[in-house]
Length: 498
Image 1 (cartoon, helix red, strand yellow):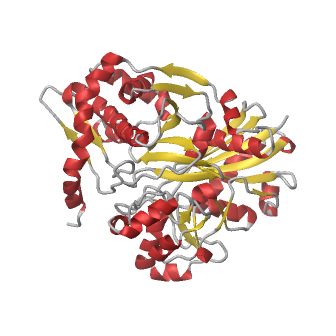
Image 2 (cartoon, rainbow, N blue to C red):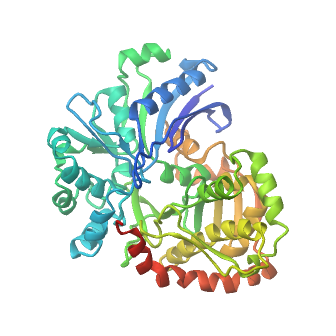
């Protein structure tokens, strides 16, 4: 039996799966790690904690299989992380995650300049404090001694790759989400480097997502019990791999994920640059881009509301069950109660770290259940705004859905009604981890074309938009569409230091 290992290094946990040549899951394991928030706007992780979790999880999978049957080990990781390391690869800073907004002032400065538009057009990364481009500029000015002593600025996947193989390399996918990479010409962007003060030498060598290494560090080879010359493939970013994992690699099909955050992405064979800088264009292969956007506020909003207002923990499938049972008792549209869900600022399509959460339309007749329903509808309305932005550039007929949202049939039906699209839930242990399994299968010739993935990624359930429910949402949607524009100046005032 041929086995393919997929490793997904997420924001909250690392997941490792082993699948066979027909993509059936043989075994899977997951290990969590901590997110540190020492100050408002700071969102950090310990890269060594993540590396230890990866080794632990990989060992748990390897002991359950025959290591000599492994064909490839391939990696997926969250976009936009950055850290400084010395010439021996030792961390000089914590890992700054996508949710870290300390560089907001730099993003504002760049966004207002003509230089920002040039950088966006070349890199395909919207100007926002999430990007390593802005974070490196922050390190330059706030940690000058660290900046001066930095050998490389790298992501979490680059750190793990260096630990395993002793090479500073970054795949085109992760690189193209940094705001530093000219994805048209496969090289670091001169204008971006000038802005943040980095150089090509202080960044990793860009390589294909199919780049291979076989000389695993002997210490880890022995610790993991792996055979000599096992093929390791560098892989790509988790969003791009999620599209691959559900088979959303053809025109007209998008992948939608709601986990902690959320995203809608579609695959194209050209960069879909948006003159307003609202969409990302991340390079996957020589002839494949992943286009779309991510929202900061997905399932985390639901968790925040339950923990803050209901004083309850929220994480399990059972929690989804009771929450959606409660909101099913409230009519679509929550009787005119609307929630702008920007509790963590927002990325696509507004790209504003100063954005805030707002309830509007509150009346004395509204109950707790109305607020609960408005929270979920607000997340769906945000995704609708993103979808509408994408459809200015490309037509989307079908949406494949993965993530925590798939635990609730009601939430899936709400998405179908609000987005006015056919929704398919795809059978997948983990879309990003399965994406790198398919990448490994492609590298070894088990898959010849990306569209072959459709035969593996089978839809479990389908949800169609209902006309009655869709009409009930229309008034709230029309108000939601303009709510941010009316409040954005006030959000900026509220974000100013007191």
